[in-house]
Image (tube, rainbow, N blue to C red; front, top):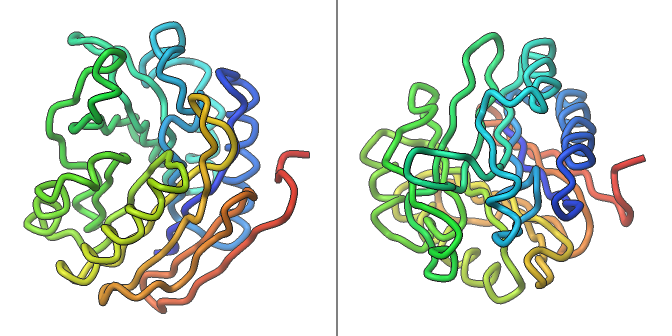
Length: 246
């Protein structure tokens, strides 16, 4: 399976513009034969905790139908970030669009203390385990038990969707490389670029093999994508010094 991690620049709070950009990335990933694409944390709104309550919705929102249609027509799994309304409050979610299936949502289970005023942690939920793929959202990679549980579930590919600044990316790179080596998992990270919550996020989306060796990495300022072929271990990289949005 060819798995893609996207590195995108969100327009603050603009769901329509960000979905349009997601569609461009999905199209590019499909052109390279990708069967799955994962976007950064809260990619559909940008990582903007103060806007989460106003923007939160559910996975069945009609605004997402275009992404579902793409999943159905192009036979690709799409994982995109969105604040989601739950009975407990607003959670950081990743909506999973699978071809001709009901949408699923992966909820962030471990929150950074700064997120507590805005979000509620989600309950544990395995997603995509049948494909030996596990998902993580940002701060979860800092909780050792998260990657350990993925390993115990038989995970072979661990994908982190994050929104990190330069300092955060440096720590994430070290943590994810160690997790790949410790648990013999291929690890991918999708980070965003541009301003999120008043700070500059610095990309460097990456792929590590199951020995913890860095296979490919994007730069810190431009949109782009990396596609990893789980069968051949081959890598495709696309990055330009301007937005992929036309």
